[in-house]
Amino acid sequence: MLRHVIAKRRYRLLASSGEVVGTINLAFGRPIAEEGGYRCFFNIDGVPWGGLRYAMGSDAVQALLLAMTRAATHLYNSEEFKDGLILLNGGRNLDLPLIDLEDASVVPNPMLHLTV
Figure (cartoon, rainbow, N blue to C red):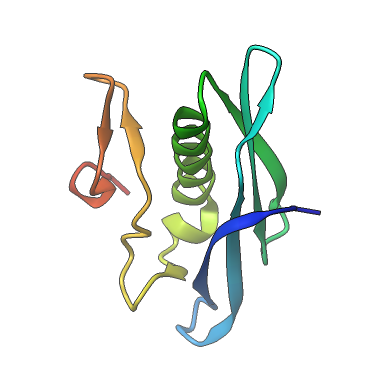
């Protein structure tokens, strides 16, 4: 169970027919100090591959950013997203940061670099 939730988002999950069949809930916990760094838990539910995960960072900001990029990686690489079945505000851009491995930068709009 995710404790100390600081941010939540809900995505619509569609059937292949385009009908809304559920939601995918994404939640981030408050980064927690640990020896040598910070751990930030996040939870994805509403899909079979979801669950509680975390990212580690040298400080709270880095831990939260890495948790967000890790969540984005799971969502953008899912079969549901590739099939066009996950939407936010009616669009496919899930509005989460990704790391562009080509130049090691954070991509604010992943749809600009996304190939499906």
